[in-house]
Length: 338
Image (cartoon, rainbow, N blue to C red; front, top):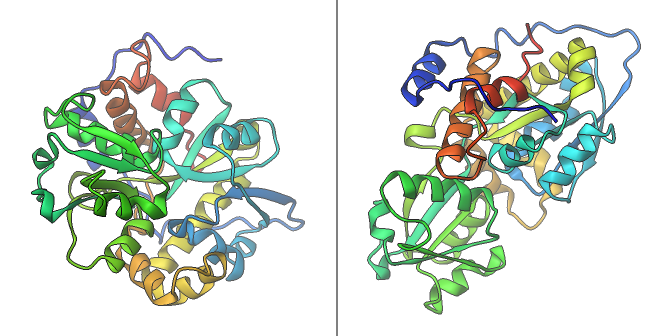
Protein backbone atom coordinates (compact mmCIF):
# COMPACT_ATOMS: atom_id res chain seq x y z
CA UNK A 1 0.00 0.00 0.00
CA UNK A 2 1.26 3.46 -0.78
CA UNK A 3 1.87 5.89 2.05
CA UNK A 4 -0.21 9.05 1.64
CA UNK A 5 1.38 11.05 4.44
CA UNK A 6 3.99 13.70 4.52
CA UNK A 7 3.36 16.30 1.84
CA UNK A 8 1.91 19.68 2.79
CA UNK A 9 -1.70 20.14 1.60
CA UNK A 10 -2.99 23.08 -0.40
CA UNK A 11 -5.53 25.39 1.18
CA UNK A 12 -9.14 24.80 0.18
CA UNK A 13 -9.23 28.29 -1.40
CA UNK A 14 -6.07 27.49 -3.37
CA UNK A 15 -7.56 24.26 -4.63
CA UNK A 16 -10.76 25.98 -5.71
CA UNK A 17 -8.84 28.71 -7.52
CA UNK A 18 -6.62 26.16 -9.20
CA UNK A 19 -9.62 24.11 -10.21
CA UNK A 20 -11.35 27.13 -11.68
CA UNK A 21 -8.29 28.09 -13.66
CA UNK A 22 -7.48 24.58 -14.85
CA UNK A 23 -8.52 23.39 -18.24
CA UNK A 24 -11.68 21.32 -18.32
CA UNK A 25 -12.00 18.80 -21.12
CA UNK A 26 -14.96 19.85 -23.22
CA UNK A 27 -16.79 17.79 -25.79
CA UNK A 28 -14.91 19.36 -28.70
CA UNK A 29 -11.57 18.29 -27.26
CA UNK A 30 -12.89 14.80 -26.69
CA UNK A 31 -14.00 14.13 -30.24
CA UNK A 32 -10.54 13.00 -31.24
CA UNK A 33 -10.44 9.22 -30.95
CA UNK A 34 -7.91 6.56 -31.62
CA UNK A 35 -9.14 3.65 -33.69
CA UNK A 36 -7.96 0.14 -32.96
CA UNK A 37 -7.89 -2.27 -35.87
CA UNK A 38 -8.64 -5.23 -33.64
CA UNK A 39 -10.43 -4.06 -30.47
CA UNK A 40 -9.88 -6.20 -27.41
CA UNK A 41 -12.83 -6.80 -25.12
CA UNK A 42 -12.97 -4.46 -22.16
CA UNK A 43 -15.06 -5.25 -19.08
CA UNK A 44 -16.94 -2.25 -17.72
CA UNK A 45 -18.49 -2.51 -14.23
CA UNK A 46 -21.46 -0.32 -13.35
CA UNK A 47 -24.69 -0.41 -11.33
CA UNK A 48 -27.64 -0.37 -13.66
CA UNK A 49 -29.80 0.83 -10.75
CA UNK A 50 -28.19 4.27 -10.98
CA UNK A 51 -30.17 6.29 -13.53
CA UNK A 52 -27.45 8.99 -13.40
CA UNK A 53 -25.12 6.48 -15.10
CA UNK A 54 -27.27 6.49 -18.24
CA UNK A 55 -24.25 7.62 -20.37
CA UNK A 56 -22.91 4.07 -20.00
CA UNK A 57 -25.75 2.27 -21.85
CA UNK A 58 -26.03 5.27 -24.19
CA UNK A 59 -22.36 4.83 -25.15
CA UNK A 60 -22.97 1.13 -25.74
CA UNK A 61 -26.26 1.28 -27.64
CA UNK A 62 -25.43 4.30 -29.78
CA UNK A 63 -22.11 2.85 -30.82
CA UNK A 64 -20.04 5.51 -29.08
CA UNK A 65 -17.74 2.94 -27.49
CA UNK A 66 -17.30 1.28 -30.87
CA UNK A 67 -16.55 4.60 -32.59
CA UNK A 68 -13.75 5.06 -30.08
CA UNK A 69 -12.27 1.66 -30.94
CA UNK A 70 -13.64 -0.18 -27.91
CA UNK A 71 -15.33 -3.55 -27.56
CA UNK A 72 -17.13 -3.14 -24.22
CA UNK A 73 -18.88 -5.77 -22.15
CA UNK A 74 -21.05 -4.34 -19.36
CA UNK A 75 -20.94 -6.00 -15.96
CA UNK A 76 -23.83 -5.07 -13.66
CA UNK A 77 -22.23 -4.73 -10.24
CA UNK A 78 -24.53 -5.06 -7.24
CA UNK A 79 -21.84 -5.38 -4.58
CA UNK A 80 -20.29 -2.75 -2.31
CA UNK A 81 -17.85 -0.08 -3.46
CA UNK A 82 -15.02 -1.91 -1.70
CA UNK A 83 -15.86 -5.04 -3.70
CA UNK A 84 -16.04 -3.08 -6.95
CA UNK A 85 -12.66 -1.48 -6.35
CA UNK A 86 -11.23 -4.87 -5.44
CA UNK A 87 -12.66 -6.28 -8.68
CA UNK A 88 -10.90 -3.52 -10.61
CA UNK A 89 -7.64 -3.92 -8.70
CA UNK A 90 -7.60 -7.69 -9.25
CA UNK A 91 -8.48 -7.59 -12.94
CA UNK A 92 -12.07 -8.85 -12.80
CA UNK A 93 -13.04 -5.60 -14.53
CA UNK A 94 -11.00 -3.02 -16.42
CA UNK A 95 -13.08 0.10 -15.79
CA UNK A 96 -15.90 1.02 -13.43
CA UNK A 97 -18.04 3.97 -12.41
CA UNK A 98 -19.41 5.03 -9.05
CA UNK A 99 -20.03 7.88 -6.63
CA UNK A 100 -16.85 9.59 -5.44
CA UNK A 101 -18.39 9.78 -1.97
CA UNK A 102 -18.24 5.97 -1.74
CA UNK A 103 -14.78 5.68 -3.30
CA UNK A 104 -12.68 8.12 -1.30
CA UNK A 105 -12.36 6.04 1.88
CA UNK A 106 -11.76 2.65 0.15
CA UNK A 107 -9.16 4.26 -2.14
CA UNK A 108 -7.33 5.45 0.97
CA UNK A 109 -6.91 1.76 1.85
CA UNK A 110 -4.60 1.33 -1.14
CA UNK A 111 -6.56 -0.32 -3.97
CA UNK A 112 -4.61 -0.05 -7.22
CA UNK A 113 -7.36 1.87 -9.00
CA UNK A 114 -6.94 5.23 -10.71
CA UNK A 115 -9.55 7.96 -11.11
CA UNK A 116 -9.39 8.83 -14.81
CA UNK A 117 -12.58 10.77 -15.52
CA UNK A 118 -16.14 11.59 -14.51
CA UNK A 119 -19.67 11.05 -15.78
CA UNK A 120 -21.75 13.86 -14.28
CA UNK A 121 -22.25 16.38 -11.49
CA UNK A 122 -24.30 16.08 -8.33
CA UNK A 123 -27.34 13.84 -7.80
CA UNK A 124 -27.76 13.90 -4.00
CA UNK A 125 -30.55 15.77 -2.23
CA UNK A 126 -31.71 16.59 1.29
CA UNK A 127 -35.42 17.27 1.85
CA UNK A 128 -37.38 18.05 5.01
CA UNK A 129 -40.98 17.90 6.15
CA UNK A 130 -42.52 21.38 6.07
CA UNK A 131 -44.72 20.54 9.07
CA UNK A 132 -41.57 19.99 11.14
CA UNK A 133 -40.43 23.55 10.59
CA UNK A 134 -37.65 22.59 8.18
CA UNK A 135 -36.76 25.24 5.61
CA UNK A 136 -34.16 25.69 2.87
CA UNK A 137 -31.58 26.32 5.58
CA UNK A 138 -29.35 23.61 7.00
CA UNK A 139 -29.61 25.26 10.44
CA UNK A 140 -33.29 24.28 10.53
CA UNK A 141 -32.16 20.65 10.89
CA UNK A 142 -30.82 21.17 14.41
CA UNK A 143 -32.56 18.80 16.76
CA UNK A 144 -34.07 16.83 13.89
CA UNK A 145 -33.74 13.18 12.82
CA UNK A 146 -32.60 12.49 9.26
CA UNK A 147 -33.55 9.27 7.48
CA UNK A 148 -30.92 7.61 5.27
CA UNK A 149 -30.70 4.35 3.34
CA UNK A 150 -27.51 3.36 5.19
CA UNK A 151 -25.06 5.08 7.50
CA UNK A 152 -22.30 4.98 4.87
CA UNK A 153 -24.47 6.19 2.02
CA UNK A 154 -23.08 8.98 -0.18
CA UNK A 155 -25.94 11.28 0.83
CA UNK A 156 -25.30 10.74 4.53
CA UNK A 157 -21.58 11.40 4.15
CA UNK A 158 -22.04 14.38 1.85
CA UNK A 159 -24.59 16.16 4.02
CA UNK A 160 -22.85 15.29 7.27
CA UNK A 161 -19.84 17.15 5.90
CA UNK A 162 -21.93 20.19 4.96
CA UNK A 163 -23.82 20.25 8.24
CA UNK A 164 -20.46 20.26 10.02
CA UNK A 165 -19.35 23.21 7.89
CA UNK A 166 -22.35 25.13 9.21
CA UNK A 167 -21.27 24.46 12.78
CA UNK A 168 -23.79 21.69 13.38
CA UNK A 169 -22.49 18.78 15.45
CA UNK A 170 -23.42 15.79 13.29
CA UNK A 171 -23.39 13.45 16.29
CA UNK A 172 -25.23 15.61 18.85
CA UNK A 173 -27.30 18.20 16.98
CA UNK A 174 -28.90 15.73 14.55
CA UNK A 175 -29.74 12.04 14.63
CA UNK A 176 -29.39 9.64 11.67
CA UNK A 177 -31.74 6.68 11.26
CA UNK A 178 -31.64 3.94 8.64
CA UNK A 179 -34.72 2.81 6.70
CA UNK A 180 -35.20 1.03 3.38
CA UNK A 181 -34.95 3.70 0.68
CA UNK A 182 -38.52 3.25 -0.54
CA UNK A 183 -39.91 3.60 3.02
CA UNK A 184 -38.17 6.82 4.00
CA UNK A 185 -41.30 8.87 3.36
CA UNK A 186 -43.34 6.42 5.47
CA UNK A 187 -40.92 7.10 8.34
CA UNK A 188 -41.56 10.84 7.91
CA UNK A 189 -45.35 10.34 8.01
CA UNK A 190 -44.97 8.29 11.20
CA UNK A 191 -42.96 11.10 12.77
CA UNK A 192 -39.88 8.89 13.18
CA UNK A 193 -37.74 11.19 11.01
CA UNK A 194 -38.22 14.76 9.85
CA UNK A 195 -35.83 14.84 6.88
CA UNK A 196 -34.47 12.54 4.18
CA UNK A 197 -30.98 12.44 2.67
CA UNK A 198 -30.76 10.27 -0.43
CA UNK A 199 -30.25 10.37 -4.18
CA UNK A 200 -32.55 10.60 -7.15
CA UNK A 201 -34.66 9.00 -8.50
CA UNK A 202 -35.75 7.93 -4.99
CA UNK A 203 -36.08 11.48 -3.60
CA UNK A 204 -37.88 12.61 -6.75
CA UNK A 205 -40.34 9.72 -6.50
CA UNK A 206 -40.91 10.41 -2.79
CA UNK A 207 -41.77 14.03 -3.56
CA UNK A 208 -44.00 12.96 -6.44
CA UNK A 209 -46.14 10.69 -4.28
CA UNK A 210 -46.26 13.21 -1.42
CA UNK A 211 -47.01 16.58 -3.08
CA UNK A 212 -46.49 19.53 -0.78
CA UNK A 213 -45.12 17.49 2.12
CA UNK A 214 -41.43 18.31 1.62
CA UNK A 215 -39.19 21.27 1.01
CA UNK A 216 -35.71 20.97 -0.53
CA UNK A 217 -33.02 21.86 1.96
CA UNK A 218 -29.95 21.12 -0.17
CA UNK A 219 -29.04 19.76 -3.59
CA UNK A 220 -25.55 18.72 -4.66
CA UNK A 221 -26.32 19.89 -8.22
CA UNK A 222 -26.71 23.47 -7.00
CA UNK A 223 -24.48 26.02 -5.33
CA UNK A 224 -20.91 25.18 -4.37
CA UNK A 225 -20.95 21.72 -5.96
CA UNK A 226 -23.01 22.55 -9.07
CA UNK A 227 -19.98 22.18 -11.34
CA UNK A 228 -18.17 19.42 -9.50
CA UNK A 229 -17.86 15.76 -10.35
CA UNK A 230 -20.09 13.26 -8.59
CA UNK A 231 -19.91 9.87 -10.30
CA UNK A 232 -16.37 9.13 -11.38
CA UNK A 233 -14.62 6.75 -13.77
CA UNK A 234 -12.05 4.44 -12.24
CA UNK A 235 -9.65 2.17 -14.10
CA UNK A 236 -7.59 -0.81 -13.04
CA UNK A 237 -4.16 0.62 -12.20
CA UNK A 238 -2.18 -1.62 -14.54
CA UNK A 239 -4.64 -0.99 -17.36
CA UNK A 240 -4.57 2.80 -16.87
CA UNK A 241 -0.78 2.95 -16.74
CA UNK A 242 0.09 0.47 -19.48
CA UNK A 243 -2.77 0.94 -21.93
CA UNK A 244 -3.39 4.67 -21.83
CA UNK A 245 -4.81 4.83 -25.38
CA UNK A 246 -7.68 2.50 -24.48
CA UNK A 247 -8.18 4.12 -21.07
CA UNK A 248 -8.31 7.50 -22.81
CA UNK A 249 -10.78 6.10 -25.34
CA UNK A 250 -13.09 5.12 -22.45
CA UNK A 251 -12.89 8.62 -20.97
CA UNK A 252 -13.62 10.20 -24.36
CA UNK A 253 -16.49 7.84 -25.10
CA UNK A 254 -18.17 8.54 -21.75
CA UNK A 255 -17.73 12.29 -22.16
CA UNK A 256 -19.32 12.10 -25.61
CA UNK A 257 -22.16 9.96 -24.24
CA UNK A 258 -22.65 12.39 -21.34
CA UNK A 259 -22.91 15.27 -23.80
CA UNK A 260 -25.50 13.26 -25.72
CA UNK A 261 -27.55 12.80 -22.53
CA UNK A 262 -27.33 16.54 -21.80
CA UNK A 263 -28.51 17.40 -25.31
CA UNK A 264 -31.02 14.55 -25.71
CA UNK A 265 -32.44 13.66 -22.26
CA UNK A 266 -35.65 12.27 -23.78
CA UNK A 267 -33.85 9.80 -26.05
CA UNK A 268 -31.34 8.93 -23.32
CA UNK A 269 -34.21 8.14 -20.95
CA UNK A 270 -35.71 5.75 -23.49
CA UNK A 271 -32.37 3.94 -23.79
CA UNK A 272 -31.93 3.67 -20.02
CA UNK A 273 -35.58 2.78 -19.30
CA UNK A 274 -35.02 -0.94 -19.91
CA UNK A 275 -32.70 -0.98 -16.87
CA UNK A 276 -35.28 0.68 -14.58
CA UNK A 277 -38.71 -0.52 -15.68
CA UNK A 278 -40.32 0.66 -12.43
CA UNK A 279 -39.57 4.32 -13.18
CA UNK A 280 -41.79 5.94 -15.85
CA UNK A 281 -39.89 7.21 -18.89
CA UNK A 282 -41.34 10.69 -18.40
CA UNK A 283 -39.83 10.83 -14.91
CA UNK A 284 -36.45 9.66 -16.20
CA UNK A 285 -36.57 12.34 -18.89
CA UNK A 286 -37.16 15.06 -16.30
CA UNK A 287 -34.44 13.75 -14.00
CA UNK A 288 -31.84 13.48 -16.75
CA UNK A 289 -32.58 16.99 -17.96
CA UNK A 290 -31.68 18.38 -14.53
CA UNK A 291 -28.28 16.73 -13.98
CA UNK A 292 -24.92 18.24 -14.92
CA UNK A 293 -23.69 16.14 -17.84
CA UNK A 294 -21.34 18.58 -19.57
CA UNK A 295 -18.69 18.75 -16.86
CA UNK A 296 -15.66 16.68 -17.88
CA UNK A 297 -12.59 17.65 -15.80
CA UNK A 298 -9.30 16.14 -16.88
CA UNK A 299 -5.67 16.36 -15.84
CA UNK A 300 -5.00 18.92 -13.12
CA UNK A 301 -8.68 19.95 -13.00
CA UNK A 302 -9.68 16.36 -12.23
CA UNK A 303 -6.97 15.96 -9.61
CA UNK A 304 -7.96 19.24 -7.94
CA UNK A 305 -11.61 18.21 -7.71
CA UNK A 306 -10.63 14.90 -6.15
CA UNK A 307 -8.51 16.85 -3.66
CA UNK A 308 -11.47 19.05 -2.68
CA UNK A 309 -13.52 15.96 -1.82
CA UNK A 310 -10.57 14.39 0.00
CA UNK A 311 -10.11 17.58 2.01
CA UNK A 312 -13.80 17.58 2.98
CA UNK A 313 -13.58 13.95 4.06
CA UNK A 314 -10.37 14.67 5.95
CA UNK A 315 -11.89 17.66 7.77
CA UNK A 316 -14.89 15.52 8.74
CA UNK A 317 -12.63 12.82 10.18
CA UNK A 318 -13.61 10.22 7.58
CA UNK A 319 -10.06 10.00 6.24
CA UNK A 320 -7.17 9.34 8.60
CA UNK A 321 -5.49 12.35 10.22
CA UNK A 322 -2.22 11.14 8.70
CA UNK A 323 -3.61 11.20 5.14
CA UNK A 324 -2.61 14.28 3.19
CA UNK A 325 -5.46 15.24 0.79
CA UNK A 326 -3.12 16.74 -1.82
CA UNK A 327 -0.89 13.69 -1.96
CA UNK A 328 -3.93 11.40 -1.88
CA UNK A 329 -5.44 13.16 -4.90
CA UNK A 330 -2.17 12.98 -6.82
CA UNK A 331 -1.82 9.29 -5.96
CA UNK A 332 -5.31 8.17 -7.00
CA UNK A 333 -5.76 10.39 -10.10
CA UNK A 334 -4.19 9.73 -13.49
CA UNK A 335 -4.33 11.89 -16.61
CA UNK A 336 -4.76 9.29 -19.36
CA UNK A 337 -5.51 11.99 -21.95
CA UNK A 338 -2.06 13.58 -21.64
